[in-house]
Image (cartoon, rainbow, N blue to C red; front, side):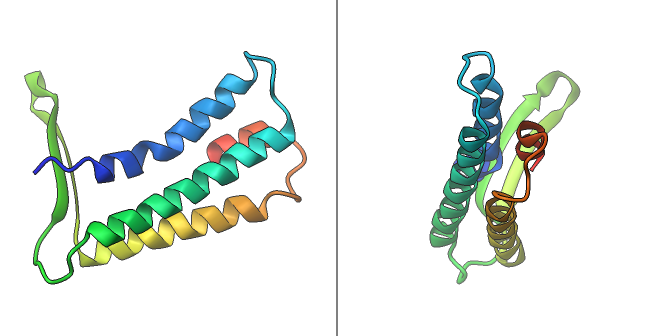
Length: 120
């Protein structure tokens, strides 16, 4: 019941954002590095979504790759993820289009590069 693949896929782009945010305090921020981290993170996220697709079994009905956990148990808030046949396609579409959008922004974006790629 607790399959972590969807949780990893959900928060993987956040790793890229945190990496970009940490470049400035450590003195290594350049536009090329920011763009490279953003593109690299989006490619890794897309490849991980292909791994999620490989884990999905279309012969089974209902939700798969489910992950459920209590988030704030004192007020009854829980965290629940799962995929079905339609949502797995939406995951692939979203990660693919995000990867294309970030990669195609390499040259046109020259102002506020850090902010742009953080919010992409």
